Image 1 (cartoon, rainbow, N blue to C red):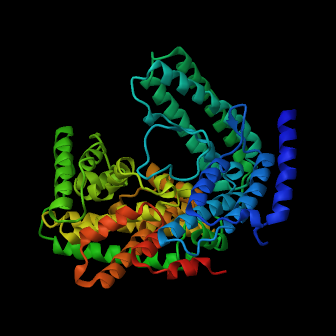
Image 2 (image 1 turned 90 degrees about the horizontal axis):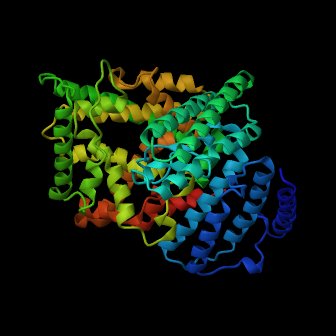
Amino acid sequence: MSRPFAMRLSILFIIALIVVAGCGPTSAPESRFQYSSYDDLVVFFDEWREFQKPVLVDGLPDYSPEAMGVQYRELLAYQSRLQGFDIGDWPVSEKIDYHLVRAEMNGLAFDHRVLKPWANNPAFYVMMFLSQSDVPAHEGPVVAGWIDVWTYDYPLSDVDASELARRIRTVSGVLEQARDNLVGNQRDLWLRGIENMRGQSASLNVFAGRVEGTSAELSAAIEEAVTATDEFAAWLVSEAPSKSGSSGVGVENYNWYLKNVHLVPYTWEEEVTMMHRELARAHASLKLEEHRNRNLPPLNSIASAEEYDRRLNAAVDEFMAFLEEEEIMTTAEYMEPAQRAKIGRFSESEGQRSFFSEVNYHNELVMRTHNYHWIELARIANEPHSSPMRRKALLYNIFDGRAEGLATGMEEMMMHAGLLDDHPQARELIWILLAQRAARALGSLYMHSNDFTMDEAVQFASKWTPRGWLQADGGLVWFEQHLYLQQPYYGSSYVTGKIELERLMAERARQQGDDFTLKGFMDDLNAVGVIPVSMIRWEMTGLDDDLKKLLED
């Protein structure tokens, strides 16, 4: 560490101690931290978003123990300042925004207190991303300075090539710092981090081929990053035998995280019960569908590129027409292109494909429902929310219950609404999807309670996914369980969020009576934004019992 930076840390440390001593979260906030207006919250939110980023030293994010210690102490002062807001007379929508800021701060506090991804999770330091996630931000924790190469236009301009070269050159420095920072003993996270780093090396090589001949500077930066990544992966391998600890956060911490960060009004135990119920319901419903369709021919998998393009494009047309003609929701011109751009391309396969490809190749319409994700992202881009807190993706994946819950819910909801009436065998796929989501959720829950290792979670999810479509030796199930181990709640958010939305629909229908329409419900839901369902429920129904439960000691 350089002497000027060390001096800066010392000064910040002294300031932080003074601030925390005067306004710790357990003491009454000082009068100068009293705020009364929503405009004050907006200003505070922007300040908070800047603060939560790590300090840059020589252009690199600093996750050293010293820097993280200073950030944590300063975070306590920020939380104390937030307590100084008087929101008693604010409209519900503005009160919700306040609680979103509170949840984000709790997310950073949990990172410092429990997860410590910079110290425990080698995959945290992956920086290279070739494709866009289907949710508002990256899934799981990610190091500051990540590189989304999919956001650039190709072929690259000279300016963009130079910028990418500069950014990719930071990979080696970040990984060098990571060797000092990674002191944790969490074996599963460590072992999967090796695979993630190997994946980064592969991504860099793919990207090198994509931009070959564009810029000598860029090619050199990529080569340097590949070397650094390969050497880092080798270092992880050499250190792996010394890692023996469990990787889950434990039930108590998991419950705190649900309640205080993701604003979910359930506990680990309640989620386990719900997931077992949905797993059993999915398997039983599948058997009933199979019985109903017993005299129909089985679904045939798509066999050629021509067939794939024809059927997938027709499925987009059918799905979008269904949304409009059956008055499911208000549609917009940007939605159809957003869906069509993500239909993918045909790929040859001598054997079984990965799980979602098996679903997609057996019936092209089913996954259009879950790909509501892309409609949602297009809405965010084309119709940004008026609230600054909802216009930006919530940190710490706080959006997951709403984003993944609605995409998962759309599968069964659209089936019940009639989308698959002319595709009876496709109904079987809906239940296979639900079974897979519930099985992998249980795997993730038992990992965090430290009842399962990651391997055991993988085996469980594979065993309980119908037709052997989720192969235990395949990449997908390992990717999923690794993500869910890094990001508590994400694994169960698909089904828990769906259940919360079903409850919301029931309550809204009871309130509105004969005035209830599915289109009105969906439009209202979409208008609130991609925030925790408990907060959406409060805004749409006026019911604040979830909030009271979340605020209980």
